Length: 398
Image (tube, rainbow, N blue to C red; front, side, top):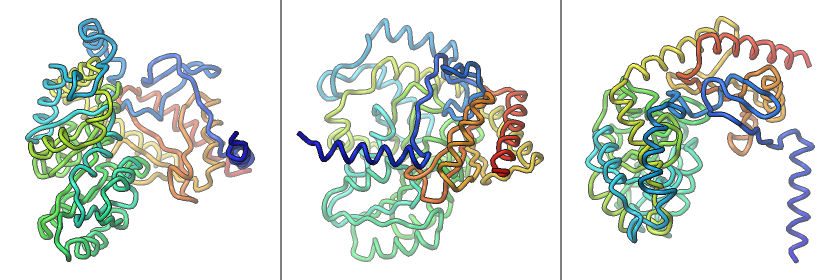
């Protein structure tokens, strides 16, 4: 049965291997900190983790997680509206809302679930969703899941003129217009032009939603993300984000915004209604991370200093990266197979990066994406840039 399917799969996988674009796992046997241990390679400098603040193995978070595991057990074993809502969910959701200066918040098992939950829940036939062309795949899927009759528009990346053109078209027939953008774009590392987006939203009576997964805990003076970066806290209608990156890395996501939006998500969003709730142990770890971040904003300042140092040293080494104030530092390689070869060579030298190509990024836009973490030492950074320079030079001679 299904022989044609399996033949096609084998052919597709064979093509990926021949092209040098087949992805291989690396198995970690330690936490993803500044230095990690990987099977076959041993101790390496970690430059591809979302653990931006180095909290994934922080003793305080581990302690809170163990306490919650003993109190609540391994998981919720239910959706929220049946018997999957715990007191720790309420405490965490209040903390998220307070931290981001919104009225309310709701947790999900991931930000992917949050994005695919809130967009379809909000929009009805006759409404419109307007998305940046480089938004994360979870936003794209959220836009695909809207009801029949909801119009979908895509504007050129971070281009306010293009956004206004789409807004004019989207609002010409009435209905709600929802603008959706990443705060920090995961592959480019650049930051959305939020002031301009909000100004246009006000002009056209649109709603703004920002996915701050790579911004929360990373940008802004106290790590409150894109809105704080632009001194616009409280001015974004809806914020989605994750606990799986800077906030401890354990997992989970959230939607934060007006109370009515949260109430509607509770009543209508399918991931909330049909999927288990965030495990209480992960909620406890996320809460501990937020509390720690509020008490120690110097962690964010330290990360900012290391990002600046990393970028300064890259320039001294003659290596060009896409510019940004975020912790994402993309080195453009353009060819996917070449990017994968460079990453493999760097791993042999004790530096763990990943080469990204299509379909994660557009065709011909392959890159090495470096993610700076506060867990890195300055010696780690110096060594990594030395390895990167040598490997890039080797690659250019081939």
